[in-house]
Amino acid sequence: MSELQVVRPGPLTTVQDLGRRGVAHLGVPRAGALDEPALRAANRLVGNDPAAAGLETTLGGVALRALGPVLIAVTGAPAPVTVDGRAAAWGAPVAVPAGAVVEVGAATAGVRGYLAVAGGIAVPPVLGSRSADLLSGLGPAPLAAGDRLPVGTPPYRDRADLVPLPAPPAELVLRLRLGPRADWFAPSAVDRLARDGYRVSAASNRIGLRTEGPVVGRTRAGELPSEGMVLGAVQIPPDGQPVVFLADHPTTGGYPVIGVVPADDLAAAAQARPGTPVRFVPLREK
Image (cartoon, rainbow, N blue to C red):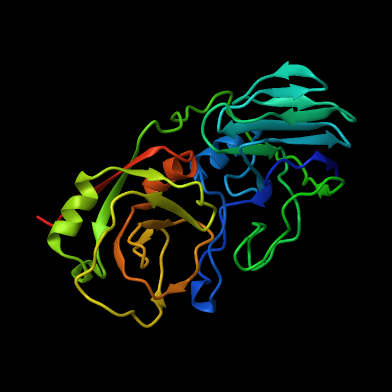
């Protein structure tokens, strides 16, 4: 089994796969890659199963020394890639010889990059997933300099030479299925949510995409008892600023949920930088 040694961990680099499914009733968040299509694409480029664990970087990239020869691919947020200082391909398979350092630089657009290695990152699974969960603390800790990451046996399967992916959003458009607590808000508040401009807050993280903009006012006072939360739920806390729950979200919460963003829209949310305009588009029943 080969290994990757962390030379530079970057601002926040974590091991992620497709997350922990079916354990929310235990109070365990889903976790997993925020931009699932990007991780799946990186795995396809190196011939992995789509659910294989890779690395999720945040804005500043990562540097790793290959302690044996490996095949890697980098997708997600566009960024320069080098092997021992020489330019290498982004969005394509790259062979890294033993002893070489592969470096993913700062993202030139978007937020989160994905590095897959043939065989996957083979840290021990916890509750069926190798993902780091920053809310509950399950799974491996964020990368630190000197860490060694085991690499699994490279698979014998076809790999793609190119997997098209969308560019990071200049405007984040999020569809919104209203409910279950839309009745806590006046119809005019829902209209304003669709009409008035919001932007991505710098306080966003893997737990939730926080937004800044006009206050979404309630018609009902008080708080709810804690109730179940789902991926994409849009909570309205007391400050009236919508929060879109992402992969590390809590499984329960007490602030009212005005609607839920479909999972297909959340990959773009993972790549929206602070200041990116946000537009909610309510989906009304016909």
